Length: 312
Image: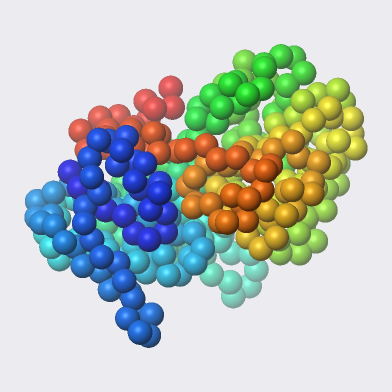
């Protein structure tokens, strides 16, 4: 088995390698003067089971091209089986047509990864579950609910006053899965209406949050506007405190400042996307490593063991 990392999130790739007690395969991912990507694999991978770790986060297009070219290089080097490991799958929010003459970019990216030569895909908390079916190759979608529930239990005493909150109707299934791991905690929903890209207007709260310690749970925090507005709405409706747990901390632009100035007690995200300097500097943002989860899934795939049992 070989592990290969692109440039998108080397700290996570190194942590996964440490979990598996093996080194990262030596490779060079560099750019020509015109910014074309060039990859050289510096070790023999003939007949090997190769896992390429690369989140397609910002800059999404550059990181996607790195992944595709890495897969092509491995295929041409006679790698036996190539698994694209995407801790964060970019373009996932473009999973359906939103109007006339618009693309379904998530399907296009799935096609590109397949056509580049990948034999399998391993990813985590896809924005929409149906994206798993966009791939024509075996695809495992890891669920972070156990990982995040363990952190919540460690930092927030369980009790009748603890409530899990979905920041929108679409995230109810995800939030319910987390609530079940927290002694079947009560669930509330924030009903919101978006006023523009990256912006949202909170409308009302479905559920009684008065006197409750609320845990917001979502898959992606990009501008963080949804989370911060939802947190303010919960406080306005009588919540004692509001913390947020998010799988993928995109945290674009002024997101970290928005979190810092919000009523959120803290925002906890996994390291599926490498932390920016502004995110690291924000005292309210804390990271939980998903390396053990992804590393264990890689080990199970390599040994032909069940991945779904990770979620039992």
